[in-house]
Image 1: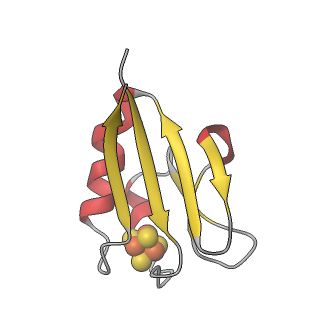
Image 2: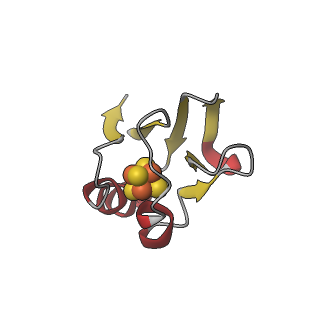
Length: 81
Ligand code: SF4
């Protein structure tokens, strides 16, 4: 079953809260620096600069809606094997 990779460029994020508000199943503003990140459940990498997560396919639409709402285009959603 394909999975979906979500990459948040936290260095670009302006903490507007749009993505976490639209798709809280995938995104949350981090306790560390207030910038968007993939929630713990799906997180595979987290630094000040970047957050990467692998999410189930059924959350892809939610993740994409959040990405589309980002004013600085900081979120990339892609299908992986
Ligand atoms: S929508 Fe973009 S700028 Fe706003 S919190 Fe999410 S990643 Fe950051």
